Length: 282
Image 1 (cartoon, one colour):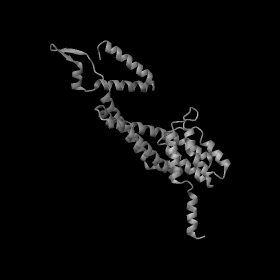
Image 2 (cartoon, rainbow, N blue to C red):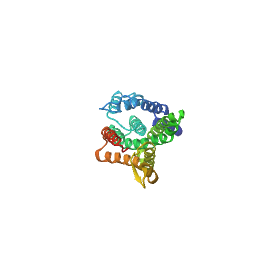
Image 3 (tube, rainbow, N blue to C red):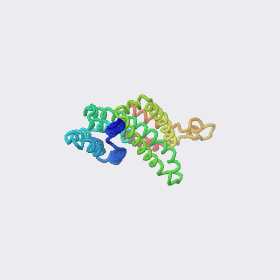
Image 4 (cartoon, rainbow, N blue to C red):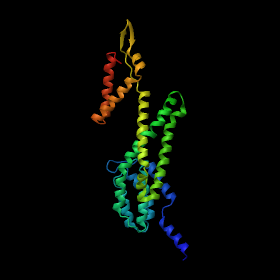
């Protein structure tokens, strides 16, 4: 056999999984991730469902190894749906290497899955909720309130486009880089830049939304040179939106001190609003 033929055979041996296989696995994950969630395994059934055909192709000649692979990919798993796609790509790459006889143990595969799902969930939830979900709402909700029908659908369409596009990119990136995928991304500094941007823009947009949609005014008045002046008019001339700012910061301080007890916070807010309205303060 010629050297070129040997090289070609080696290349073919290195890649059993095709791009179509990856696309099918990714699509299964995206469509099933929130469907079979359970308290004991969370997203594990969706993960195993997306890996099913991949594992059957890799271990078609080894039933015992296939059984073991099926078991380890139906254990507890929970992460961000979009950003966690990179874990699928890495896992498929490692399973492919293992099926071809490389020194990749089941413990390594499972450890990478469990070790990555938490950090990626934190990063993904921050970016998705801090930027992707917030900015389109701030842009298009005022348009929708003014009667624009198409603006009402734009935030959802933008989020879907981001979700599917970014998850597919990470899915492929994880497979192409294998176990080095996350190290490559971390060493590039990309994650830190994304987190910094998400923090700044997220806080900025939350401030804009609070100023735009939290409406609190006071009905108190005072007499100045025998003229009755509304306190709210004075506040608007000095510090516009001071009362909404105080309400938002009060809720923020409550959450930082008492924890995320949102139902209790809603009840307190309603009671305080009713009392202040009864006495003519707001």
